[in-house]
Length: 397
Image 1 (cartoon, rainbow, N blue to C red):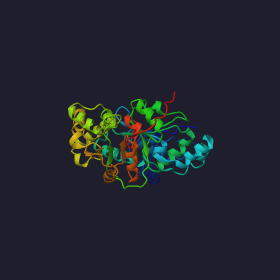
Image 2 (cartoon, one colour; image 1 turned 135 degrees about the vertical axis):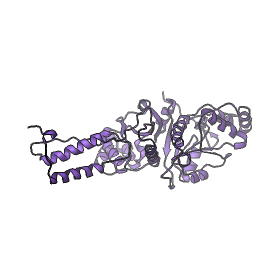
Image 3 (cartoon, rainbow, N blue to C red; image 1 turned 45 degrees about the vertical axis):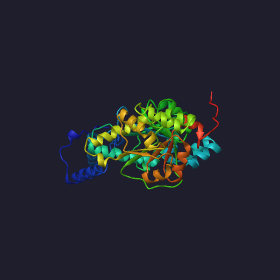
């Protein structure tokens, strides 16, 4: 077959000009503001001897325009805030999980392949991921070439064949998730550091514990019992203090010596910063992105808002917390000291996309009132439930 070269074409009639206009209109529909790699739109065309000159010009125009289009690229991991989410956290896969547990992996994979054209329903992390994407859009408006964005990675031990349904579901909901890690039954934890993960969200508490032991911020997510209407313009993240943002050193004193000793200890060491907890680095990453908005005079219109929701009392133990954040160079937008009151009603007003706490009774109270919650299995609080010491399972060898 002889090669057709564009340079050999000397004239284009009126019909071909119309075809060119149609090609350009088609290309204009491909434009996107999403941080998506160029390769997502790259097309490969195979030309045969039956291709007309008009068709060639149309295709050649599309290819050239696409290749020259400065699509925003995905953020590089070393600049991005990387959020790794499991498939069961992003999507509601309760029915599929039941098949896996009751009928085995082969039936599970077969079911997913059979239903791969049916999008999965949203899971606990879905609103959080959508809020991250909204922040990315705002960042792109202010910093078109910046690579400091949220980078969402689907981290799952699913088999690759299940990936088609996951991809179809992601595309159905128009989510920007380009990076997958599907480990075919093996734990994905070993890949978290390779992906430079800033936060890992899963439904599997053992994997979350393993990630925290590796020094990675992680939490086990829970669906709320009712649904609250969440902001679609602002990412709202609520943190507990002790054993979440901070270490559990003060909580150990409460559990072992009581509140009076705790108050005395916090007063004595008010000017000594608390050690960092497992989620401190994630708050730090959020602060880095917030400052990009502040630099553009967008503080009052910032699409990220952070909350400290702690059972501490402000008067007797709050100063050390605030001074610790100050010593780290970190800001929190709202600090709420509840002095032991339930957190659920307050969180119902805040309506966070995610709330992190180390104690399950706070998670349960938040769930009941519609808050998407994430349990951080860290510190002495894991040995207690509602103030009572619970028996700990023996560690696996």
